[in-house]
Length: 315
Length: 282
Image (tube, rainbow over all chains, first blue to last red; front, side):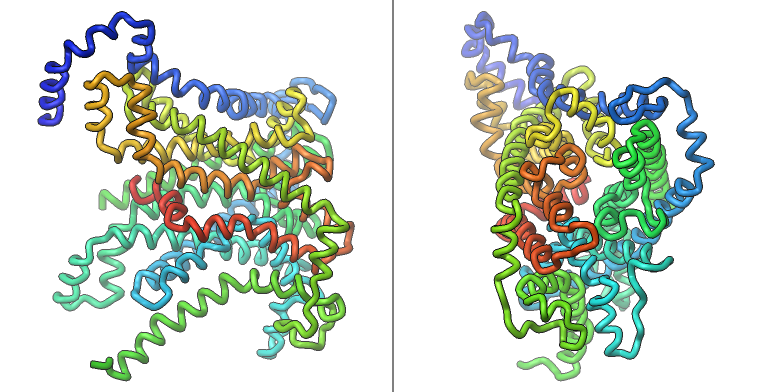
């Protein structure tokens, strides 16, 4: 490599200058191995105490019948076996996959559409781009409170608008399936900006000449999007999907504010059920077992996303 | 030359109208927060009137928030926690990111991947065992429990972003400083750090926002109302049983959103850079 050659030359020239320092005590810090580990050490220490240890301890808790303040006995896989027989847990299991699947499809479609829209030139574009991301950056529970009020059983503004069009709106957070649909609507509202702005940033790195060449060949706008934008956006789409699927799968805040898992425990996701079982009910071992379900699902999701994208690349 | 009317119409249908619809759908809840917070109760619970306008605006809900609730405490608590955990995260992730970007040492690549995996671990996976750890350390019910645990999701994110950032800075400057007799630490502090300021700013702004918005750890670790953060305080203390103080709830939600919205609007470019750093470069 040419770069390395130049470097070797310059350091050869500088050797006399560096020699005296060889004997100073600080020289140990000049070794990449030593300094590398030293710089990593604080971060690693923190992550060991507050991530690795709790993770392992969580696995242990899930294998015990611990309750809050009462250290439990080792019970093997009993928590997990009990859960598979529990109808609330089975519902939660289905909810989590349905919620993640449905919202991800919508966020992907809306995200691509908004990104393609904002990729045009129009007045106040910078302002619009900044405004689009707002739902994603404000505290989720606080915007969820606004939705809770918008979905109010008596004073719902959504239903007020629907009524002007002659439609009688549902009691949004009342009877199934509306509570789950409401949660999905708010999740899509909150998550789409992240997709859109990430995709927009990806689109802006695409070489404009590709579109010009395609236009000369008579390609339609849809053809350009399908055959130029989408393929070149694939790396961005992969990362965004990966992050978003994990965050959606482990969602807590929206459900906690809007339904608390109700009515009759029908809208729980893993995280909210783990919270309810582990803390207010005090069965911390069982709660830990429920949150651990996020982990294998997480691994599978990551694996599937990467596998799918690889296969697409090979085609 | 003015554009043909057909072209103008086409732009309206394909760009302007969709942009306006998108904005209305995405921003309406904020308008709703704002208008609710200044409506007197009589108008809030009037099903006959037009809900989109306010006839007699009032600041009563804001007054209630500051005089009858601990809202100002929560704002101070959240600011304290967000500033401190951001500072800690930067102090840990800048050196870690630099080491992983620049140095070759046994296990370095593995540690890099380990940090990336930690970045993907959601808070909801760990909150139950972590609550026990916080108890054992005697941190339960204190703001320190948050100051020390928020960096667990900020440091992996920050290190990961900064690895990419440091790699994008050419090595040559640091190498010539080393040749000129600077120590490696001096090269990091005097050469690489100033060049990495935009990346560090991205990490800082992101970390502050994430800390400000965090919910589940604050909900689980802190039960004393005076020590709560804004997201937890507003959701737990302003709702009493089935009684909703909608006016002051929306006032609290709006004020709790303003700090991050302000920071975001000042640094939107850095924010988008941080958001997409992994996505675009990866």
